[in-house]
Amino acid sequence: MSKDNSYQAVMARKNEIMKSSMGLDYEVYRQGELAFDYERMMNDCGFTLEDIIKIQTQTKVGNTPMFELHNLTRAVRKISAPGKGARIFVKDEAANASGSFKARRASISAYVAEKKGYKGLIAATSGNYGAAVASQAAQRGLRCIIVQEVFDSKGIGQPEIVEKGRKCEAFGAEVIKLSVGPELFYYLLLTLEETGYFNASLYTPFGIKGVETLGHELTMQIRSMTGRDPDAVMITHAGGGNLTGTARGLLAAGCQARVIACSVDLSGLHMASDRDFNRKSFTTGHTGFGVPFATWPDRTDVPRNAARSLRYMDDYILVNQGEVFYVTELLAKLEGMERGPAGNTSLTGAVALARELDQDKIIVVQETEYTGAGKHHNSQLSFARKMGIEVRRGNPEEGVNGRSVVIPEHLSQVVGRHQDMEKLRISYLKNAAKQLEPAKWSDLDRKFVAADVKKDLNWLDQALKQI
Amino acid sequence: MNQVKAGTWVEIEKTLLTPDQRAPQVPEDTRHTPYIMKVAGFLTADALYGETVTVKTMSGRLISGTLNVIRPHYTHSFGDTVEELLNIGLGGEL
Image 1 (spheres, rainbow over the protein chains, first blue to last red):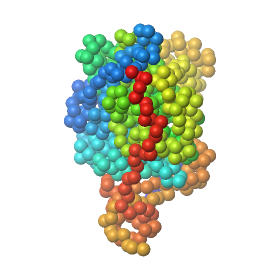
Image 2 (image 1 turned 135 degrees about the vertical axis):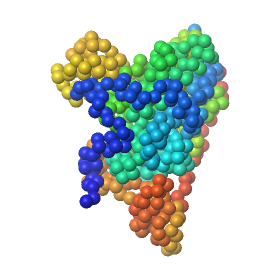
Image 3 (image 1 turned 60 degrees about the vertical axis):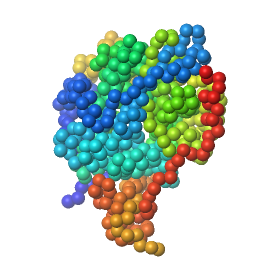
Image 4 (image 1 turned 90 degrees about the vertical axis):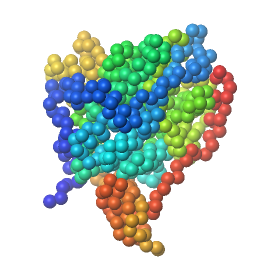
């Protein structure tokens, strides 16, 4: 008898499909309605940092250069108050095999899939991660299927996503191109079930452990270049894996730098809207993922998300599309580095933050991504114009998402906006309360929730009075 | 119309979910559209454009759908010149 492949029926088979596609049983980590043993889950995958470095070295991942951006730092100092203007460094993650830090994230899944005898890998992603999985699969002799949201109901593809799909195909992957909608996950499940391939989810412990080397590596590089630790590490934030993995790597290296998230503000646009899909110039690193994933990580394709960003986040800065395009152009003109705009989100946050910090402080921008046709700020702006978006120079704060992109006239207009961390934590608590009313939380649930927002039990008791 | 030979690299299109079968949480504008997939592969038998065909994909799967594009290729580019970018970084910043 053939299986029922309706949306509802496939979603109902989610847990069994997930279990067989990863060989990972999340139930063993369960401690309560909300609580699970996060550290045990992370450690059970059995890889030390040294193991991961070895695995990544096999497939052209890691050991990327660190550069100090002298000219950009000088430009920031020119517009800062006397004595302000921290040193800005960038880790050139575009040098990984697939052109972004996501190679780190895919590397361990590919290794595990090969060891466990899976024939191939599947990932649902519209981004650099697809290219990373395809690149890692190619090197390990595994088949690869990438499931990607590409075009709207008129068949028009977002140029950045079209390019990333092309790159996946360049590495020999089968790319399933889908129209707009959350049913991406439905098709992922169907394909996992049909093929028996390994689910290279972004949110497994393998994915996050792979990024720990990034935090560790950057600490060692800054120590060797400057004789001290960085003061802040700026991380482009979407689903939370980049931040979580990097922050864990910093801790492993004994680095106490502030962990700062940065996203492009896309408020006002709906992520599953057919209309809005092609009226945004960023397909990742934006608030459409960053805020919901920070305030409730367990909304992914795995039962428990290994990317738990509020556990590690000290600050969260938002920048707008125009600010990132301006800084991307500056990176090319002042520093001679042409890199993809989405990866420059954190660079834009660093420019804003550098103005607030003293000149002896060090900010590390922990990634860049490759650029090329489609995946370039000029192609994004040109496309935006074709979609009826106004593009002009001016005060970037005048930009209205979905209607206009306003590129700063001057560096002094790149300011960023600090988010209220307390509000984010309260939002997390409200989401937790939707799962189970706080009066019914066990001691383990309470401890887990407090740790998940980087706070203690006293804070939790006070905060719960507000919701 | 010319027949497309078996083994040709083509793109097929397939409706995965009709509007009434879509996920309950999709927003209003998306709800009225079908959920469509496209995939490229090698045509398994001679066929005409617009016919329902089967392709063998890069992972070796056999998938059926409407023959949509023959020898699909990419046309994305760096876009038209955006003059607003040109004078950034040329003066004032340093």
